Length: 171
Image (cartoon, rainbow, N blue to C red):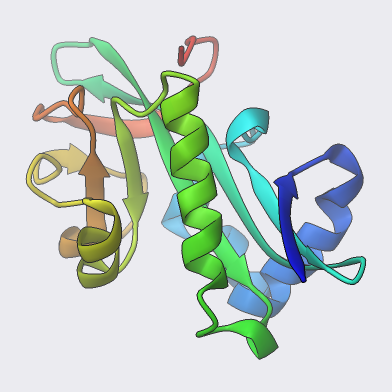
């Protein structure tokens, strides 16, 4: 039986290993890593899937900010990465992890402005993410525009640059 539990500091090394297996060690060069920076994941919104004492999946959520062209800082929560052990992919585990993170965001009042980079068909159909408000967002690296998705009543439809939320409260 797979248990979804909060991500703890003691899980970090095993999650890093899982991320390497799921996305490759070059993952640190991806644009998403530049967007979230060196900050810490939001503890109450990050989870691991454990099966018989082994982490087989994880999801982390990050505090980020859209700095608008008018120099306004709009806080957002970046969802992901969602990582599932290669031998467990296509089992629904990624969906369970995402559901857990989104439920926690809602319970903590942090679901007003969520964003991610991902498959629009999957994240749109199951979780309501769209690219409707993200066309003028800029990132510190390349991105496939149709994969830049957001959801929530407070998602800004403004031009600006996404980056780490350094010293900006998310709640």
